[in-house]
Length: 117
Image 1 (cartoon, rainbow, N blue to C red):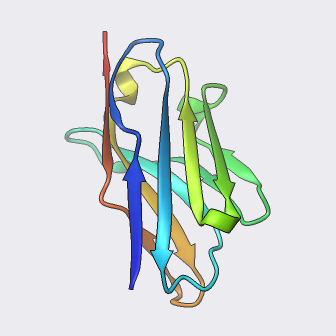
Image 2 (image 1 turned 90 degrees about the horizontal axis):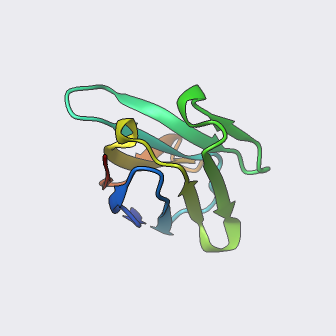
């Protein structure tokens, strides 16, 4: 059984910051890539940022320079530091981890980020 628990979402004003966390627990064995995706109302789920086990990062163009993804391997945790937030960043943010032992990705339940103008 694998569980992903996200935290850190909430309501913030334009230009503000939030830090999301996602901790994986259970029979994990090893984690490859970890990432964050988001889904705004009425839209599809899109990639925000990913980070490999070696620390290589990838970002959506819309968040480059504002968001930073990081991970703490000893804690099986991935973070997303979000700065200079904009109303278009409003969405439910989902954590994603790739577990090679199971040959599949696991998803968190999501955490809501609302940016008010």
